[in-house]
Length: 82
Image: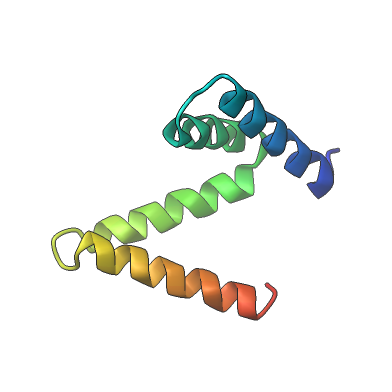
């Protein structure tokens, strides 16, 4: 059984190896998403559900509005230490 620390360390190692190979941030996201699908099933489910919800609003709100809403949600979570 892996701990949160082990998972965080794995993600950090993935990011560092990609950065050291000169790959873009998009490559980091791709590798992290792939790792989450295997190692983080709950987080992958949350990601999939959030993405589906965002796509429900396609054409109704702008991309920048969507990013703004996600940023507000992030700040709310950080402020409540969830």
